[in-house]
Amino acid sequence: MGRAKPSSKATDDWSGIIGPALGLGFAVFAFGLSFGVMCIDAGGSVPKAMAMSLFVFTGASQFSAVSVIAAGGSAISAVVGALILASRNAVYGVAVAPSLRGSLPYRLFASQFTIDETTGMTLAQDTPARSRRAYWVTAASIYVFWNLATFIGAVAGSNIDTEKYGLDVAFAAAFVGMLAPLVRSRRARRVAAAGAAVCIAATPFVPIGAGIIVAALVALVGLRPGTERAAPVSTGGPA
Amino acid sequence: MTWTLIIVLSLGAYALKAAGLVGVGVRDFPAPVRNVIALVPAAVLSALIVKDTFTNGHDLQIDARAVGVAVACLAVWRKVPLWLVIVLSCAATGTVRAIS
Image 1 (cartoon, each protein chain N blue to C red):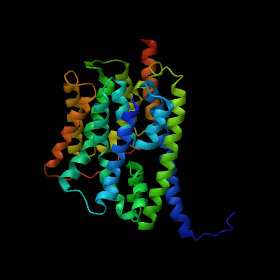
Image 2: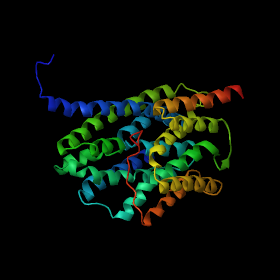
Image 3: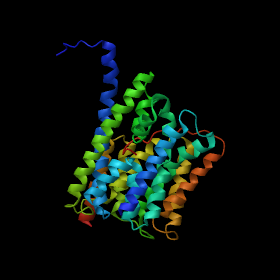
Image 4: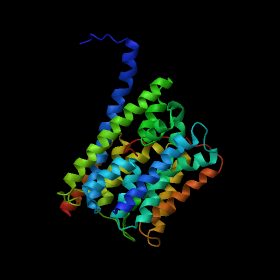
Protein backbone atom coordinates (compact mmCIF):
# COMPACT_ATOMS: atom_id res chain seq x y z
CA MET A 1 0.00 0.00 0.00
CA GLY A 2 1.12 3.55 0.55
CA ARG A 3 1.39 4.28 -3.15
CA ALA A 4 -0.86 7.32 -2.85
CA LYS A 5 1.58 8.87 -0.39
CA PRO A 6 -0.81 11.21 1.34
CA SER A 7 0.92 13.93 3.29
CA SER A 8 1.23 12.99 6.93
CA LYS A 9 -0.95 15.95 7.84
CA ALA A 10 -3.82 14.71 5.69
CA THR A 11 -3.48 11.26 7.23
CA ASP A 12 -3.65 12.75 10.68
CA ASP A 13 -6.74 14.69 9.73
CA TRP A 14 -8.65 11.57 8.88
CA SER A 15 -7.23 9.21 11.47
CA GLY A 16 -8.20 11.49 14.32
CA ILE A 17 -11.78 11.45 13.09
CA ILE A 18 -12.55 8.03 11.65
CA GLY A 19 -11.36 6.09 14.70
CA PRO A 20 -13.48 7.93 17.26
CA ALA A 21 -16.44 8.06 14.85
CA LEU A 22 -16.35 4.29 14.43
CA GLY A 23 -15.95 3.91 18.18
CA LEU A 24 -19.11 5.93 18.73
CA GLY A 25 -20.83 3.81 16.10
CA PHE A 26 -20.00 0.61 17.95
CA ALA A 27 -21.09 2.21 21.21
CA VAL A 28 -24.55 3.05 19.93
CA PHE A 29 -24.92 -0.48 18.63
CA ALA A 30 -25.90 -1.90 22.03
CA PHE A 31 -28.36 0.92 22.53
CA GLY A 32 -29.83 0.34 19.08
CA LEU A 33 -30.27 -3.37 19.76
CA SER A 34 -32.08 -2.58 23.03
CA PHE A 35 -34.22 -0.04 21.25
CA GLY A 36 -35.25 -2.50 18.53
CA VAL A 37 -36.13 -5.21 21.04
CA MET A 38 -38.10 -2.89 23.33
CA CYS A 39 -39.91 -1.27 20.40
CA ILE A 40 -41.36 -4.68 19.53
CA ASP A 41 -42.11 -5.32 23.19
CA ALA A 42 -44.07 -2.04 23.36
CA GLY A 43 -46.34 -3.23 20.57
CA GLY A 44 -44.36 -1.90 17.65
CA SER A 45 -43.34 -3.70 14.49
CA VAL A 46 -40.11 -3.93 12.52
CA PRO A 47 -41.23 -1.15 10.09
CA LYS A 48 -42.25 1.08 13.00
CA ALA A 49 -38.97 0.52 14.84
CA MET A 50 -37.08 1.33 11.63
CA ALA A 51 -39.17 4.45 10.96
CA MET A 52 -38.29 5.69 14.44
CA SER A 53 -34.56 5.19 13.99
CA LEU A 54 -34.46 6.44 10.40
CA PHE A 55 -36.61 9.53 10.84
CA VAL A 56 -36.71 10.50 14.51
CA PHE A 57 -33.01 9.64 14.86
CA THR A 58 -32.35 10.98 18.32
CA GLY A 59 -31.84 8.08 20.69
CA ALA A 60 -32.75 9.33 24.14
CA SER A 61 -36.05 10.67 22.79
CA GLN A 62 -36.78 7.42 20.99
CA PHE A 63 -36.10 5.50 24.21
CA SER A 64 -38.24 7.92 26.18
CA ALA A 65 -41.23 7.63 23.83
CA VAL A 66 -41.11 3.83 23.72
CA SER A 67 -40.62 3.67 27.48
CA VAL A 68 -43.79 5.72 28.05
CA ILE A 69 -45.82 3.68 25.57
CA ALA A 70 -44.53 0.42 27.07
CA ALA A 71 -45.69 1.62 30.51
CA GLY A 72 -49.18 2.21 29.13
CA GLY A 73 -48.90 5.99 28.72
CA SER A 74 -50.72 8.01 26.07
CA ALA A 75 -49.25 9.02 22.74
CA ILE A 76 -49.43 12.67 23.84
CA SER A 77 -47.34 12.01 26.96
CA ALA A 78 -44.88 9.99 24.89
CA VAL A 79 -44.47 12.67 22.23
CA VAL A 80 -44.30 15.67 24.55
CA GLY A 81 -41.75 14.02 26.85
CA ALA A 82 -39.63 12.92 23.90
CA LEU A 83 -39.68 16.36 22.29
CA ILE A 84 -38.74 18.13 25.53
CA LEU A 85 -35.77 15.80 25.67
CA ALA A 86 -35.01 16.56 22.01
CA SER A 87 -34.98 20.31 22.59
CA ARG A 88 -31.25 20.25 23.24
CA ASN A 89 -30.71 19.34 19.60
CA ALA A 90 -31.78 22.91 18.78
CA VAL A 91 -28.92 24.19 20.91
CA TYR A 92 -26.57 21.75 19.21
CA GLY A 93 -27.76 23.07 15.84
CA VAL A 94 -26.62 26.53 16.81
CA ALA A 95 -23.30 25.13 18.03
CA VAL A 96 -22.48 23.28 14.81
CA ALA A 97 -23.93 25.89 12.42
CA PRO A 98 -20.61 27.75 11.96
CA SER A 99 -19.01 24.49 10.77
CA LEU A 100 -21.84 23.70 8.37
CA ARG A 101 -22.29 26.82 6.30
CA GLY A 102 -23.70 26.22 2.88
CA SER A 103 -26.86 26.32 0.82
CA LEU A 104 -30.28 25.98 2.44
CA PRO A 105 -30.80 22.41 1.11
CA TYR A 106 -27.38 21.46 2.47
CA ARG A 107 -28.23 22.76 5.95
CA LEU A 108 -31.71 21.24 5.86
CA PHE A 109 -30.13 17.86 5.08
CA ALA A 110 -27.42 18.30 7.70
CA SER A 111 -30.05 19.09 10.33
CA GLN A 112 -31.25 15.50 10.52
CA PHE A 113 -27.91 14.48 12.01
CA THR A 114 -27.61 17.16 14.69
CA ILE A 115 -27.39 14.94 17.77
CA ASP A 116 -25.12 14.41 20.77
CA GLU A 117 -22.38 12.45 19.07
CA THR A 118 -22.03 14.57 15.93
CA THR A 119 -22.05 17.76 17.99
CA GLY A 120 -19.46 16.44 20.41
CA MET A 121 -17.15 15.33 17.60
CA THR A 122 -17.61 18.57 15.63
CA LEU A 123 -16.85 20.82 18.58
CA ALA A 124 -13.78 18.75 19.50
CA GLN A 125 -11.91 19.66 16.29
CA ASP A 126 -9.43 22.50 15.97
CA THR A 127 -10.10 23.72 12.43
CA PRO A 128 -13.33 24.46 10.53
CA ALA A 129 -12.41 21.93 7.84
CA ARG A 130 -11.87 19.19 10.38
CA SER A 131 -15.09 20.12 12.17
CA ARG A 132 -17.12 19.80 9.00
CA ARG A 133 -15.46 16.47 8.18
CA ALA A 134 -15.97 15.18 11.72
CA TYR A 135 -19.65 16.07 11.56
CA TRP A 136 -20.29 14.07 8.41
CA VAL A 137 -18.09 11.09 9.24
CA THR A 138 -19.71 10.77 12.66
CA ALA A 139 -23.18 11.25 11.21
CA ALA A 140 -22.59 8.45 8.70
CA SER A 141 -21.16 6.10 11.32
CA ILE A 142 -23.91 6.66 13.88
CA TYR A 143 -26.71 6.58 11.32
CA VAL A 144 -25.57 3.28 9.83
CA PHE A 145 -24.84 1.53 13.14
CA TRP A 146 -27.94 2.86 14.89
CA ASN A 147 -30.27 1.73 12.14
CA LEU A 148 -28.55 -1.60 11.59
CA ALA A 149 -28.75 -2.31 15.32
CA THR A 150 -32.40 -1.26 15.48
CA PHE A 151 -33.21 -3.63 12.64
CA ILE A 152 -31.40 -6.57 14.22
CA GLY A 153 -32.95 -5.84 17.61
CA ALA A 154 -36.45 -5.51 16.20
CA VAL A 155 -36.21 -8.73 14.19
CA ALA A 156 -34.77 -10.60 17.18
CA GLY A 157 -37.23 -8.92 19.52
CA SER A 158 -40.12 -10.75 17.96
CA ASN A 159 -38.70 -14.01 19.35
CA ILE A 160 -37.42 -12.90 22.73
CA ASP A 161 -39.04 -13.12 26.14
CA THR A 162 -37.83 -9.70 27.29
CA GLU A 163 -38.75 -10.12 30.96
CA LYS A 164 -37.00 -13.46 31.24
CA TYR A 165 -33.68 -11.94 30.19
CA GLY A 166 -34.23 -8.74 32.14
CA LEU A 167 -34.30 -6.70 28.94
CA ASP A 168 -36.99 -4.45 30.40
CA VAL A 169 -34.25 -2.68 32.39
CA ALA A 170 -32.18 -2.03 29.26
CA PHE A 171 -33.60 1.49 28.93
CA ALA A 172 -33.10 2.36 32.59
CA ALA A 173 -29.50 1.09 32.38
CA ALA A 174 -28.96 3.14 29.23
CA PHE A 175 -30.42 6.22 30.89
CA VAL A 176 -28.03 5.76 33.83
CA GLY A 177 -25.13 5.72 31.39
CA MET A 178 -26.40 8.84 29.63
CA LEU A 179 -27.04 10.69 32.88
CA ALA A 180 -23.64 10.13 34.50
CA PRO A 181 -21.61 12.61 32.43
CA LEU A 182 -24.35 15.24 32.75
CA VAL A 183 -24.28 15.54 36.51
CA ARG A 184 -20.77 16.86 37.02
CA SER A 185 -21.98 20.23 38.29
CA ARG A 186 -23.69 20.55 41.64
CA ARG A 187 -26.69 22.27 40.08
CA ALA A 188 -27.12 19.47 37.53
CA ARG A 189 -26.98 16.88 40.32
CA ARG A 190 -29.67 18.72 42.24
CA VAL A 191 -31.82 19.00 39.14
CA ALA A 192 -31.42 15.27 38.50
CA ALA A 193 -32.35 14.41 42.10
CA ALA A 194 -35.32 16.75 42.02
CA GLY A 195 -36.45 15.37 38.65
CA ALA A 196 -36.45 11.84 40.05
CA ALA A 197 -38.30 12.91 43.20
CA VAL A 198 -40.92 14.85 41.25
CA CYS A 199 -41.50 11.92 38.92
CA ILE A 200 -42.02 9.49 41.82
CA ALA A 201 -44.29 11.92 43.64
CA ALA A 202 -46.36 12.60 40.53
CA THR A 203 -46.69 9.02 39.30
CA PRO A 204 -49.81 8.04 41.30
CA PHE A 205 -51.66 11.19 40.30
CA VAL A 206 -50.87 12.06 36.70
CA PRO A 207 -51.44 10.09 33.48
CA ILE A 208 -48.81 7.40 32.89
CA GLY A 209 -45.71 8.98 31.39
CA ALA A 210 -46.75 12.52 32.26
CA GLY A 211 -44.49 12.33 35.32
CA ILE A 212 -41.58 12.76 32.92
CA ILE A 213 -43.03 16.01 31.63
CA VAL A 214 -43.70 17.31 35.14
CA ALA A 215 -40.12 16.40 36.08
CA ALA A 216 -38.79 18.34 33.09
CA LEU A 217 -40.19 21.52 34.67
CA VAL A 218 -37.43 21.23 37.27
CA ALA A 219 -35.03 22.41 34.55
CA LEU A 220 -36.68 25.83 34.77
CA VAL A 221 -34.33 26.58 37.68
CA GLY A 222 -31.91 27.29 34.83
CA LEU A 223 -33.69 30.63 34.48
CA ARG A 224 -31.90 31.71 37.62
CA PRO A 225 -28.36 33.04 37.10
CA GLY A 226 -25.55 30.54 36.84
CA THR A 227 -24.25 29.03 33.65
CA GLU A 228 -24.74 25.57 32.25
CA ARG A 229 -23.09 24.21 29.18
CA ALA A 230 -25.18 22.07 26.89
CA ALA A 231 -22.87 19.08 27.14
CA PRO A 232 -23.75 16.43 24.59
CA VAL A 233 -25.31 13.37 26.22
CA SER A 234 -22.70 10.69 25.77
CA THR A 235 -24.34 7.63 24.47
CA GLY A 236 -25.63 6.76 23.49
CA GLY A 237 -28.21 6.67 21.33
CA PRO A 238 -28.10 9.23 19.00
CA ALA A 239 -29.49 10.54 22.06
CA MET B 1 -47.22 2.77 19.16
CA THR B 2 -49.18 4.25 16.29
CA TRP B 3 -47.93 5.59 12.98
CA THR B 4 -49.35 8.98 13.96
CA LEU B 5 -47.08 9.05 16.99
CA ILE B 6 -44.07 8.13 14.88
CA ILE B 7 -44.81 10.77 12.24
CA VAL B 8 -45.45 13.54 14.78
CA LEU B 9 -42.31 12.62 16.68
CA SER B 10 -40.25 12.52 13.46
CA LEU B 11 -41.45 15.95 12.36
CA GLY B 12 -41.08 17.45 15.83
CA ALA B 13 -37.57 16.08 16.33
CA TYR B 14 -36.50 17.29 12.90
CA ALA B 15 -38.03 20.74 13.46
CA LEU B 16 -36.02 21.14 16.67
CA LYS B 17 -32.77 20.15 14.99
CA ALA B 18 -33.40 22.44 12.01
CA ALA B 19 -34.50 25.30 14.29
CA GLY B 20 -30.97 25.50 15.61
CA LEU B 21 -28.98 24.75 12.50
CA VAL B 22 -31.12 26.48 9.87
CA GLY B 23 -33.45 28.79 11.76
CA VAL B 24 -31.28 30.41 14.34
CA GLY B 25 -28.06 29.76 12.43
CA VAL B 26 -24.96 31.38 13.83
CA ARG B 27 -26.76 33.61 16.28
CA ASP B 28 -27.67 32.00 19.57
CA PHE B 29 -30.52 31.43 21.97
CA PRO B 30 -30.71 33.77 24.99
CA ALA B 31 -28.60 32.54 27.90
CA PRO B 32 -31.54 31.68 30.22
CA VAL B 33 -33.09 29.53 27.49
CA ARG B 34 -29.78 27.77 26.92
CA ASN B 35 -29.43 27.11 30.62
CA VAL B 36 -32.89 25.57 30.89
CA ILE B 37 -32.36 23.40 27.83
CA ALA B 38 -28.96 22.29 29.15
CA LEU B 39 -30.58 21.12 32.39
CA VAL B 40 -33.49 19.28 30.75
CA PRO B 41 -31.64 16.00 30.08
CA ALA B 42 -30.54 15.70 33.74
CA ALA B 43 -34.13 16.15 34.97
CA VAL B 44 -35.75 13.97 32.32
CA LEU B 45 -33.21 11.13 32.27
CA SER B 46 -33.32 10.72 36.05
CA ALA B 47 -37.13 10.80 35.94
CA LEU B 48 -37.06 8.12 33.23
CA ILE B 49 -34.71 6.01 35.35
CA VAL B 50 -37.00 6.02 38.39
CA LYS B 51 -40.06 5.52 36.21
CA ASP B 52 -38.56 2.46 34.51
CA THR B 53 -37.24 1.14 37.81
CA PHE B 54 -39.86 1.79 40.47
CA THR B 55 -43.19 2.28 38.74
CA ASN B 56 -45.76 -0.03 37.27
CA GLY B 57 -48.53 2.04 35.78
CA HIS B 58 -49.64 4.32 38.61
CA ASP B 59 -48.17 2.08 41.29
CA LEU B 60 -44.76 2.29 42.90
CA GLN B 61 -42.99 -1.00 43.44
CA ILE B 62 -39.57 -2.43 44.15
CA ASP B 63 -38.70 -5.62 42.27
CA ALA B 64 -35.93 -7.26 40.23
CA ARG B 65 -35.59 -4.14 38.10
CA ALA B 66 -34.15 -2.24 41.07
CA VAL B 67 -31.33 -4.78 41.29
CA GLY B 68 -30.53 -4.36 37.61
CA VAL B 69 -30.46 -0.58 37.83
CA ALA B 70 -28.31 -0.72 40.97
CA VAL B 71 -25.87 -2.86 38.99
CA ALA B 72 -25.99 -0.32 36.16
CA CYS B 73 -25.17 2.52 38.59
CA LEU B 74 -22.27 0.54 40.01
CA ALA B 75 -21.00 -0.32 36.52
CA VAL B 76 -21.20 3.29 35.33
CA TRP B 77 -19.41 4.42 38.44
CA ARG B 78 -16.65 1.88 37.71
CA LYS B 79 -16.41 3.33 34.18
CA VAL B 80 -17.55 0.14 32.48
CA PRO B 81 -18.26 0.62 28.73
CA LEU B 82 -21.90 1.52 28.15
CA TRP B 83 -22.80 -1.55 26.10
CA LEU B 84 -21.53 -3.73 28.94
CA VAL B 85 -23.51 -1.67 31.46
CA ILE B 86 -26.69 -2.65 29.63
CA VAL B 87 -25.69 -6.31 29.40
CA LEU B 88 -24.78 -6.55 33.11
CA SER B 89 -27.93 -4.76 34.18
CA CYS B 90 -30.21 -7.01 32.14
CA ALA B 91 -28.34 -10.12 33.28
CA ALA B 92 -28.71 -9.11 36.94
CA THR B 93 -32.45 -8.53 36.57
CA GLY B 94 -32.95 -11.77 34.67
CA THR B 95 -30.97 -13.69 37.26
CA VAL B 96 -32.97 -12.29 40.18
CA ARG B 97 -36.19 -13.25 38.38
CA ALA B 98 -34.90 -16.75 37.68
CA ILE B 99 -33.99 -17.48 41.29
CA SER B 100 -36.90 -15.74 43.01
